[in-house]
Length: 414
Length: 147
Ligand SMILES: [Zn+2]
Image (cartoon, rainbow over all chains, first blue to last red; front, top):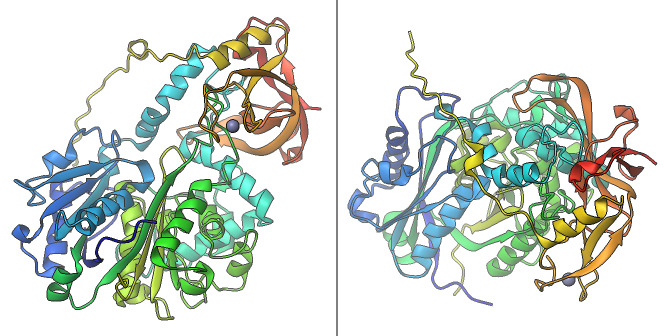
């Protein structure tokens, strides 16, 4: 087991002033600079203090191939090392891990993870099409009817169509019902109403209201699906020595891990379909991250969780996968009110991805939200209990990639 | 007034060349003409895949042992599509199950007919409806029907 090389802490976070459907007033690079400026302002750092930048956003979604180079000037990174990550939904956390590795290894003392998505300048469905193009080409070449009317080419409707197989498998195997997906979606939209950086906010959201939204692909309704959001997030990490000089409050990185599995859906040609609700990478990565963080039982030791839930059922499903409860138990915790901000196992007080999804930022926002909870700076969406340790989860890729970050209020003993 | 500039373009699909003439797929197609499903089994862990890949997902070793898979199986998960990729409602809801065929460990995705959407459930027994005339394409497996 490789031990941590040196302690790394989050010393600053920067968000764009709003996360909304369309930011027509700024270009991609200008929007990114808003978050970078906010991060510098919040820490009092100057551009010359940042040793390295790690950039994250999804390839193809905006039709811009090298946004990290376009934005280099706007993020004050000219003349500095820059790396870019594009791992799908997990991008934000992959970029965060990149920044973490820079500092943990001693290659940099202070690094900034910069992530964004500006969906209004592209077409996410076209982007998703780019992701499954090899699959579709292979299907065409094999004589499969890709419209899904006959043959074995039952591609559902975009991302929601793909994920509905996972939701339906999860419901069957956990004993939860659609009413629980309605209820968790409503809880998160209510939470989002308390988060100034959330997109879809509804303080009056109820399960009954969500249940009235149209069925898109059973069991996924419109009300269970994330929006497409414009926004940028940055996160600044520093070595223990630097952090002590710069920051009053630090959220320490206790453990990180990631894991990939087979493609779990649509991958007909290469025969890779297994249970889309199994999500082995989440199980493996959370175990590994806990091991690195010295956590034996996340149920007892983790106070707060941010789950990457592009679709509402995933909050419940991943709570089980990452070890915050037993399989089949998450919907019971929900019924008992334990997942609420006032509950014993608060989750997604931020409103989750289901309320705000500027894809490049989404997995980083899970980390930054955990950091805010630990530092006691989450404002109106601060949970009632004290948060000493928190876990952030990222999900995406072709549905089979998972990232985990565990933060704490104290640095790890090396 | 908001001014929008629109740039139109075409995506030339023919410029993509993906090699899918894999051994496992070829083996499968060859036998589908005879309405038989032939997968590949890992000699180490016994996992059977259809169509067979080059290597075992679990053992990471090369595999090449043919293994026949039944055209009967059970629904492991499913969805009922009500909208197309653009969110436009479909004329008829579309049932799309993912099926574990008997004797196979990987799952296969398809469409289902001969069943009302409300009657589909996980664990349901189904079988492949073969095309009247098989040509050795994946189209030979037309859809699933209740067993
Ligand atoms: Zn094997």
